[in-house]
Length: 178
Image (cartoon, rainbow, N blue to C red; front, side, top):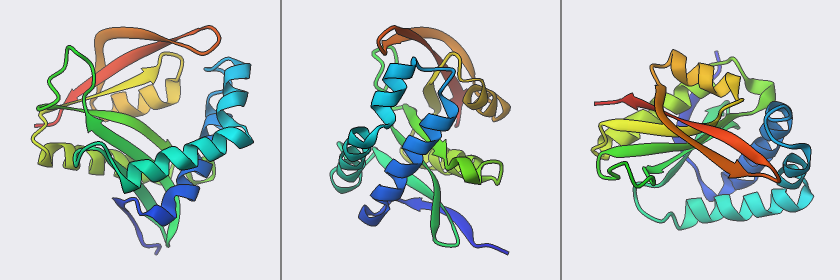
């Protein structure tokens, strides 16, 4: 039986986190993000940028409520999730937390790592006094959206577009966590 769990990310985890991000985006977002934007966000230069950003997130988070968590299986990083106080002006950051990202290594999917990451994120947000959680997802990301919906999340009516060479639709999901 393997030893699995979720913990706060350490500085030594940053390389694995960035590698998982790039591989998960390459495999999962080909039909979601325009090809040029995806290539830019997953290329060799991008990998270095992601490593720097995740290193900063671990070493100097903007607040104690900004966290990077990693899923671990037998000492191997299998996925990660980041959360923070909600950043949208229509949300109260004192009571609403935001799931910023949740990605699992493509070779480690369907083994419970995403569920463990989501549960740990919700536990941390509750400990921070949050009663609601939100997450922005690509509207065309059927996999993540279905995963969150199966966990009790639902669209809250907020929509957005992010410029990735062309507009890419986003939808905000929410759930009560009190």
